[in-house]
Amino acid sequence: MALDERNNLRSEDLHYAKAAASLPPLRRMPRVLKVNILLLGALLIVFAAFLILAFNVKNSDKIYPNIYTLGVKVGGMTRDEAAKAIADSGFDKYAGKFINVHFEGYESAGFTLSSDELGITLDPMDYTLSPFEYGRRGNLLKNAISYIKCLFVKTEIEADTSVRFGPAAFMLKIKNATAKIDREPQRPVLTTEGNAVTVTKGISGVSCDVAAIAEQVIESFRTLSFNDVVYTPLIQAPEEASFDRAFEMLHRDAQNSVYSAELGDFTEERAGVSFDLDAANAALREAAEGESVTVHLFYIEPEVKKADLEGLLFRDTLAESVTPLTPIADRTTNVTIGASCVNEVIVQPGEVFSFNSYVGPYTEEAGYKLAAAYTDGEVVQELGGGVCQIASAIYYCSVYSNLEIVYRSCHLYVPSYIEYGLDAAVSYDSLDYKFKNNTDFPIKIYANVENDMLYVRFVGTNISGNYVDTEINIVKEIPYDTVYVIDEGLSPGETYYVTYGFTGYQVDTYRLVYDKEGTLILRSFEDESIYSKRDEVIAKAP
Image 1 (cartoon, rainbow, N blue to C red):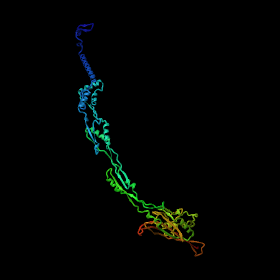
Image 2: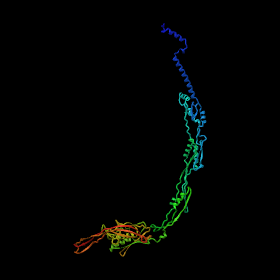
Image 3: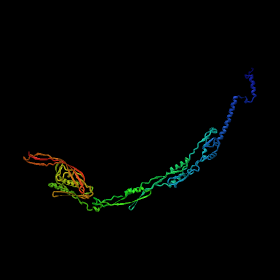
Image 4: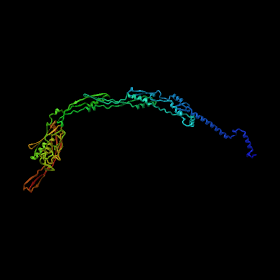
């Protein structure tokens, strides 16, 4: 094969080159290149078509195809066309619906509510926005892809079908209806006129819960049941009626005439006023609300009137004590002074009598003399010695007058002038005798010395006629011993008493109360008296 030296080609290649040069350009391209050019052209055509589609979709006023909402096909429609299709589907279940609201026991207050009054407004146009916006929220490319997808796939757009209620109209209607029912509870009323007392029972209050009624109404529409609402108003019971307050205000016990220490006389009696409280309240329980029950007062006469008591003051001698005096002048002086201190003392009802507050202190300035008295177990000379005899006589009269004993102490040794167990020891600095007038009348004490005797008498008022006696029981007796002491000044056979002996005793005293017929009505322990023994001491010659 010959070669072209200038082009370094074979002769046959030159032949083919000349032939190719005579053909059209495309036919002269390689086959693969042809295919690639064709594919590129197709793609450009498709892309151009896609762009045209995307721009058309972007500017379209129609919903993408194959779109549904509320079960209605709205794809390919304008929003107006879609709204009409939704409206024609009967989607508004509330249109023309209404319910009745009833109030149990108050039928005249019932009313009717329509869906319009609840402010239920369903605009089909509102349900076209979401379908129209579907696939349009991306860029141009994404929106076109969404459109193409809708051509082949059915798409259901969820719609918010919840109902919005405009409260103004229907809430006002509920409030107007409940205003005819609501009332505050009425309290019971108490009135008096003359001797008549009237209680009028209260009336229950009634109230309606507007919010609860509204909730039931809304629920009836929301659930599409459209059932009537039956509401039972709330009953608020009235305050319980009773005659108790009237009884507290008007009831008054009858007041008997009694002695008044402040007046120094008997008080005026006063009639009582009352009514049958139990019967009145029972009648009130049977009465209906708003009804009245009337009762009439009656009067209670007092049992004791002033006229009955006049002349009773200091009418009766309650008790009397007469005791002998020891023939010692200074002691008798002391007893006389002490007796004058308590003579004609009046002890008012409820008052506590204190012996020392009247008789003491025992001083020379008061006229008291030195006389025998017991101190620390020894017989000593003391100012006022002997006034214990007055205290003992007053104690005796207190017991026999059936009075309350507040404080009493017995003597160290047995007394010689009064019965064992009925004495009372006093000492201004340490021992007092006290009793309380627990009767309803004043008591006057009379005390005086006459013919070497001490007279003490209680005068008061004994309406019951009861009287007192005593029971003295010697529980124990303690004999004294005789003790001899030597006195160098005595001659053989001579003796004398240094001290006289006293037997010791334990004595229990009981108070016996009898009625005026002589029947024992009370036996009570009064007090225990413990008297010490004192040995007999005799002086004798050596």
